[in-house]
Image 1 (cartoon, rainbow, N blue to C red):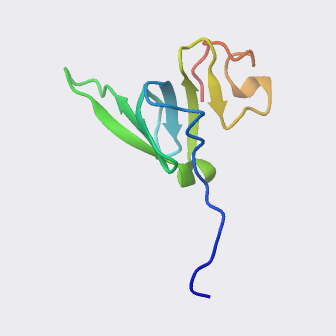
Image 2 (cartoon, rainbow, N blue to C red):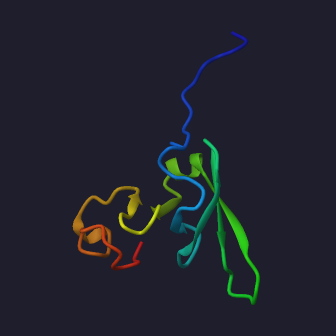
Length: 108
């Protein structure tokens, strides 16, 4: 068969949008990074952050297939009134904030 259909992991672009605040940690990093979303496609989220060097900003990319593989821990919010966590915590201790989804705690 020349063409086959197969399921593909993609971002729900109605769930996260440009301008959202994020705190993310890739499993290869020692600590997480906070920033804001500058672009979203079904396959990639682009995050701008301040690397701590004067008046400089930088970007990193979160790819849907890497999120599916478990490489990323992500917290995101449109306005900080509600913070979404991915992957969803399995117990209160996983969020680092007592499980109440408030702004306390930054442990990923």
